[in-house]
Image (cartoon, rainbow, N blue to C red):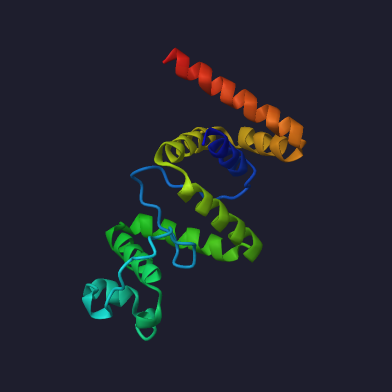
Length: 180
């Protein structure tokens, strides 16, 4: 799994988006309804419209007519999203609106790429997900000029150079582990 998490980190570095790729653990990550919801077990139970709290029904009223025909996993995702929205403060809601507008402005090919990367991330074991989050946080703390330079180096690198970069990153990580 180490190789896979490295690949995802490097893919994130190559993604010149203003959107965070993954939310940090414990942070609310308001995903717009149009974004790919996390995969649920195929046996997720359907939700009766009447069983939703009135606040969620109000938020989801645009789906009321077709609610019963939505796949149970989609119902679950919409209900979770509505619950997250209701728990946000006004500043978080404004950030969510801005992210949604940014998402909608992206070309469909770009959104599909992000969806695929999210699905890859979701398939990782929890330890690998934590490693990707940690690496992303470290990358996000770099000054913008340094992030741009790293992205540019990655995008201009040949497959052999990228493999070498991955090896160096893994060796650096191993040395850090040995020191701790």
